[in-house]
Amino acid sequence: MDIIVEKLVKSYGIQKAVDNISFKVKTGEVLGFLGPNGAGKTTTMKAISTFLIPDSGNIFVGNYSVNKDAEYVKQNIGYLPENNPLYEDMPVIDYLKFVGELQGISKEKIYDSLLSVIDTCGLEAEKHKKINELSKGYKQRVGLAQALIHNPEVLILDEPTTGLDPNQIVEIRDLIRKIGQEKTVILSSHILAEVEATCDRILIINNGKIVADGTTVDLRKQAQGDDIIKVRIEKGDINEIYNELQKIKGAVIVDIIDSNNSRFQIDSKPSSEVATSVFNLCVKKSWTLTELIPVETKLEDIFKELTSE
Image (cartoon, rainbow, N blue to C red; front, side):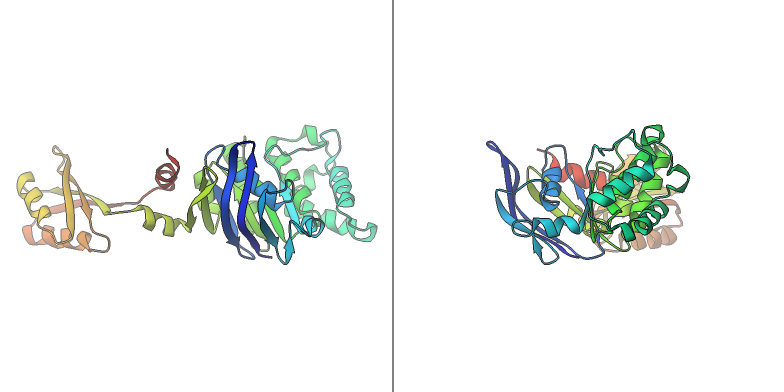
């Protein structure tokens, strides 16, 4: 089920939390929603889930508009807010049954729904424990289970791994990836490696506006100017090496980054095959090429570049 956001605006007093944004999430796609605190991520996700009413614009979940068909939209969305509100005095299975009944699942189908989400979220061994007896990781699993109990087409997850340890993050990440094979998922997170590993596409929002939209490969290409490679060349005079590297076609800037170990950084025009030219030069001059490392733009760098004031 596709999600289409059209010219969404939401303000709190004089502050525009979301400023006329539009985007689309395709059926079966996992979208990573990134942005600094106060960028408008949570407001957008709450608007999609009908938790709040936008000032203007529209959102369609499938063929349903949040402005006109809010009840139908709710039936097709599972929502896990950042603070994961749970009734912690209840056993897991009783809580999930309660949520299922709130979602309108019939008595004939509730048992099968419980078995399905307990299996999907790995809660079989914990299902009779009270929620307050669970680790933070298992509480997040319960939160995912309550969002999935009615088998929605769309899943909205706001910071689903906040406060988890590294092992728990991996577990929840794997679970989201598994769920994303069948559902449309929007996932917000401050953990950039998690988004890169889990999501098909990334949307970055800053000051209520979309500043980037694409795969990690797309974003790197947009952020990169020159290609950068680092090389270490031995058995040659450092000054001669430096001069010869500057002559390579496509090389824009050559820097000596470690004169003691004969290391250089070469900024080059994209797709100029400078690495091949460096190799051929070393063969020609009988120099020893001991390192040749392409420097990849990190998602963290892209994020900082697009969201810094």
